[in-house]
Length: 78
Image 1 (cartoon, helix red, strand yellow):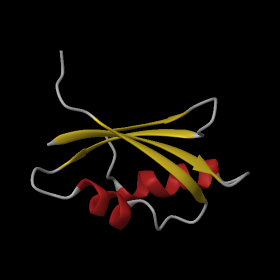
Image 2: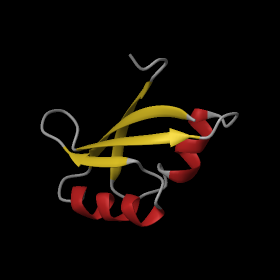
Image 3: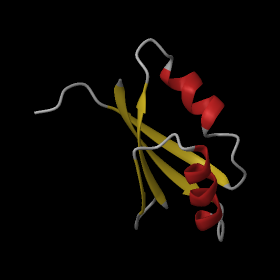
Image 4: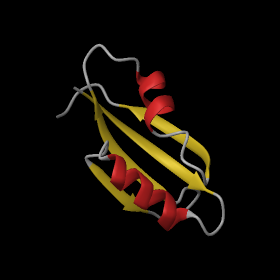
């Protein structure tokens, strides 16, 4: 499993609805509301052999209210 963090910027007034939709999909390990440039921080594990971009596109980016994302890939835990 590959650990990936996705920061999500939502359209104004939609962060709670977006978070609820993500929770219903049960794709996340952890989901946080954040301050700063992005509204939500999502931690998820992508199965080995699956394309990261396709997984995020197919399972996350069709949620209405998401304006922008920033994905951070991880490589090794210390």
